Length: 214
Length: 204
Image (cartoon, rainbow over all chains, first blue to last red; front, top):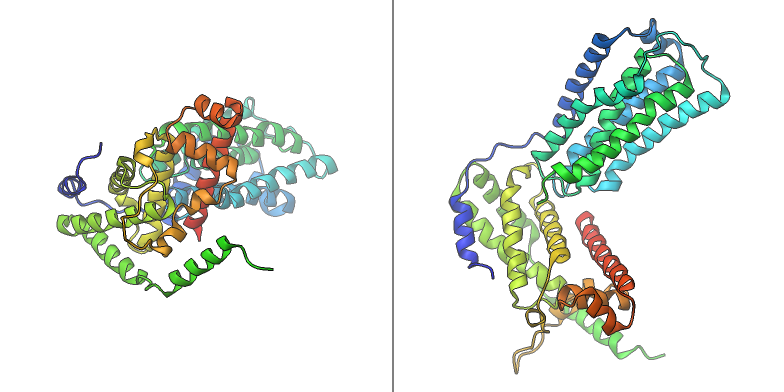
């Protein structure tokens, strides 16, 4: 049995304290992106060598440049969608996640096409042992940060929010490995990009667990 | 070919509804936004006014969509839970954005959540009796239970029996003459459908 409505309203008004404003979605996404790109770059450099000439390849080889661009775009689209999803009434799960998922799919597709067509030369230069685990490990702090930011707001679709956090974080880890580790499309598919799916799945499950229901 | 009596009745209701005065939403929007902005700065008086007004709005919203919920504790629970949810997430409202979509997104989410969890007694949900001598409000009846009416008959029956009338899955399955698994599937489908329609309203 509910208590009188007026009593509840009196209590809520009595409980009112000035509330700090939540950062707008775009600003929060940019802040996460800036901090997490810096973090992933730092740990990548700190934990091993970076493939010689990787940065030059971005400009010199359009295929590689496009790969890097797609990875960055997928991560950015995912975190922007997440920051919108955490505010009620601003976004809906599948509709807002679609651009990020499409970019991720295109990223996979580009690597697959590169492998099938034998476009990119397979090379062991810069190979990092255990890169598959490094993608996951490097993605964990950004994943935690994204979920923390989502938790401070009110995401109504918790699994979608968690999944987007996983895609954004996993994309940064994979991107770091694309730049640091050996360049080979099949290796990239199996050891760099596939872990994104794992992190995304973990994000979706964690989203259900750690994000508070209304 | 003559239109069916039901179709004629529906047309009359729509005509009646179209003649009714339409509330000025922009005025509500401005007032609620102003009160909420003051509330976020700590103005308790503005907040109490806002909550009192929103309680009525949420109640009307629920009555319009779930006609079977009349004067029940469940309806009052929905209103109060919605107020509590709005209170908890008030910091997520952006003064630069409209208030109404934000508020209804929270309310719809809460209602779906409560509908999923509800264990209602039949007595709470008995169809409302119109007061003797009073004219039924066609506009209200038109809206009444339109969410339920949009469901397939089998799914609607499953939802009403289990969620609104309080039967267990097994009891409802026995009444309808299907297996408990089939009843569970119908209930799930119906809740998904209601959720989808509420979301569509959210986005429109």
